[in-house]
Amino acid sequence: MDKIHAMKVFVTVAEMESFTRAAESLGLPKGSLSRQVQALEDGLGTRLLHRTTRRVQLTQDGLAYYERCRDVLATLEEMDTLFQNEPATLSGRLRVDMPVALATDIVIPQLPQFLQHYPGLELELSSSDRQVDVIREGFDCVVRVGQLQDSGLMSRTLGLLQMANCASPSYLMRFGMPLRLEELSQHAMVHYSQQFGGAPAGFEYYDGQRSHFIQTGGALTVNSTQAYRHACLAGLGIIQAPRHGIQPLLENQQLVEVLPGFHARAMPLSLLWPHRRNLAQRVRVFMEWLTQLLKGYVA
Image (tube, rainbow, N blue to C red; front, side, top):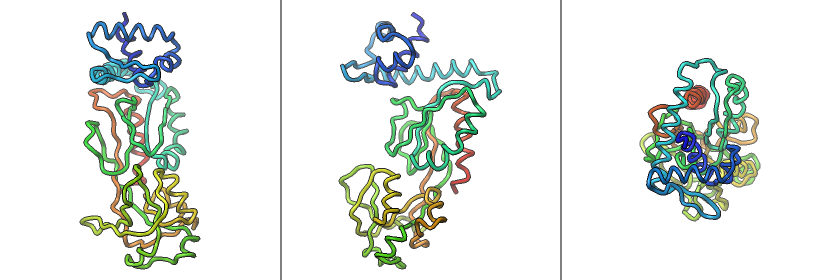
């Protein structure tokens, strides 16, 4: 058995949670993949994968082995490109996750230049408001907004996203412009929550020491940043969002800034990646490019 090849097969099956999809991705027969993973399990003396008719999942031993396999394979890739510094010599696939607004407003418009500079790279870009499982889903790096939880991942703080309050002209025509915090009780907010069912936090403002929350009205709660922005444009209420994403809408007067002296606390923007001694050169190059790109949008 070619153990390195078997490890690559195992990692692909684990990330895709399917022997069928992994076989299609690798261009190999499904039976061959199954036999190679079985040989790994026999050699290790433990089960690496739970197999059902619908999906394949890592066991606890499988997760530990998966993480070590990723380290070993990344080290081998790094060795292959150790003396290759030219952009044309970099190749391989990157899997990255970031918030939707960040991807659509900032990163994707600049991607053509990056990919032209590194023509051998392929990018799998996930953009959603859920927090992906970096290890289990096989991501090379992710960008997250907000306070980080202790995840065991490596991280780099890129800066702070300044916040702004805004509403649509149609909303302000109906309900008026709030000029004082006390008036917010007569106004509606579009509420944002990744998990439905909880009580809305209300309007947040930061006094330099701590955040304060004022209860408001508001009939709509969303769990998507795109829906959040579009609900505001539709006149459904006030929102509080990172300024970089709504600045063009403020400039063309599709949205109007509200209570500019009372901002929510700035949100940290962070880059995270799995804990590995050696990162593949392509991952390092992409993370450095992304760090430089985002410098213009953070404080």
